Amino acid sequence: MLYLTWGRRDGDKPIGFPDYLSMQDATTEGYQAYQKFLMADGSPLRVQLSPVGLTYRYIHEHEEHPLDHDSLFWRLYVQDGSHPTPIGSYIGACSFYMRIVGKSPVGIQFYPKGVTLEERDNIQKWVSQFQ
Image 1 (cartoon, one colour):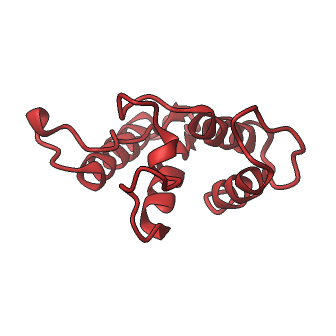
Image 2 (cartoon, rainbow, N blue to C red):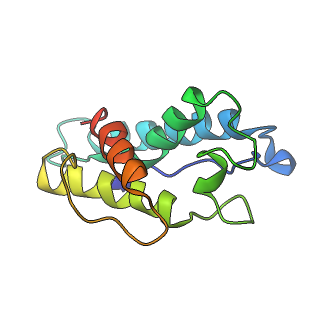
């Protein structure tokens, strides 16, 4: 299983990513290419992607102003704009659960401190779109 990660909130200009979307798209394409490579030419491997970055992108696309400091997208990251908050980590947990168990995370009762009940339900629903 490959951990399809997320782009940095503001991209990474020094390495050629002027914004989040350009970095996320390149990251996603890279993981998909690596998955394809690992399964090429009759390989017995069945490589899955844990769609964490896809869920981040979904949230970015569906927020009116994703870079506002009070938006959910902004709150996926700690201050450095790279590492996840508990909300971002919960997306990862739900994504891996879905891939490992083979079931939607919708209905899981657990959610960590720092995540609201509404955020839990939305994250579970958003992650499950990539089942």
